[in-house]
Image (cartoon, rainbow, N blue to C red; front, top):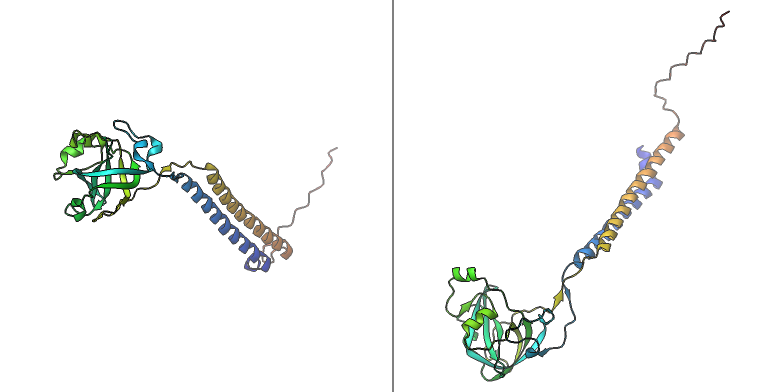
Length: 264
């Protein structure tokens, strides 16, 4: 039996079966990966930046297609309307209201600071500036968490338009906020920029790729079946060529049948 299993012809069958298993397994895993990635978020075409006033207005929620859009805001920062947003990546966001000059303000995240004593907190840019960044929707406010947390004066947990209106009274505030990426002229003391991803959309699972993965794995199982089939046939063919086993016990002789007797 071992001589048959390790003969040249059968060894080739072994190698072909192993190769088919590896190839089918890898191709199936590749298709499975394509299926898994298809359900993740996909980047959309990033439009050219537009004026922030065209995408947001006081008392109106920004639309879904405006989220994460690149915008340009021109105006002057109001140092009296500045807050620190706590619990942001181990530090704080520096949030300052930008006066657009038309009677409205837009909140701008100027950057990230490690502590409230960072020099960038007090270094509010003076004069007219141009801020480029991405527009984000107003964050939801957890009133229960806000009541249970004791934050220092001048700090908030979320960038919520509803909360900012109460804190910055007599301010016509546009909904949403801008995460600044660049500022002109550049600030004398700059905070660390906050990363704002480009717009994305939810992916759609491609079930066809999952079917392809299953198909490749079925091909691998079929290769194993064919290998077993050919090896079994080789062993059976060898057994027929070798004839009966000489060590086997001889079969008992058959008893001849007696002729039937005729009764007169």
